[in-house]
Image 1 (cartoon, helix red, strand yellow):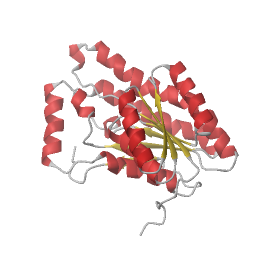
Image 2 (cartoon, rainbow, N blue to C red):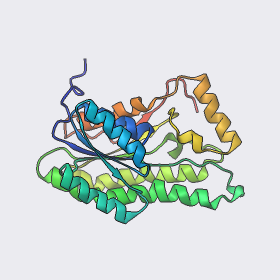
Image 3 (cartoon, one colour):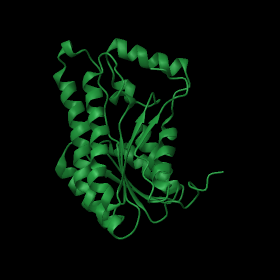
Length: 258
C-alpha cells in the first residue's frame, strides 16, 4: 500500500492549475483539493470553472475560480496576485493549458499554427513568468515547490500532420529539462508529463479527417487513459519527499503502440 498519497498529503499547499475547465486540469484540481491543497483553477470558461469550484467546496475543499486567458501575460500576472492575496503563496503550479489542431503543412492553416504556439508555448511561458517567484519563495522557506508541465508523447513521436502541435510539445518538454538547471539548485522541482491518448475533449478540436480517425479508432479499440489517471500522476509527483524530483514521466495506455 502506498504511504505517499494519503488523505492530507497536500495540506497547507496552494496549487495553481491552468486549463482547469475540463479534462486533465479539471480532474487534477479535484484530486489535489481532495488531498488537502487549496486550489486556484484558471481557464477562459468561467462557467466551467465555477462548476469545478462548486464540486470542490461541496466536498469540503477550498478552491478559487480565476477566469484567465493564459496567452495574455497581463491576465496571468493579475491572476497570480489575486491567488496570493486570497489563498496564499502558490507552491505547486501545473501549467496544463493547451490545444491540439492537426493539419497538413501544405494546408497553410496559419491561424491554427498561431493558436497552438500562443497557448502551448506562450501560455506556458506566461505561467512560468508569473509563478516562479512564488515557487522560489516557497522553496527558500523550506517547503516543497513544484512546477509541472503537460507535454505529450507527440513531443518525440513522428506522426504525420502533427508537425506544429508536436513542435510546441517538444518545446514544453525541453524547456522543462532546461529549467531544472536553474531552478533545481534552488530546490524547486521541475517535471513534465507526456501522456499518450487521453479521453478528453482535446481530440474534439481536431478537424483533419485522418487525425480524427486515428484518435477515434484508438478510443474505441483500446482502454485509453482517463483524465483521473494523469491527475493521480500529478498528485504523486507533488507528494514524494521534496528531495525527489520525478523529472519526465511518459504515461501510456497499456495497449497503445503508436
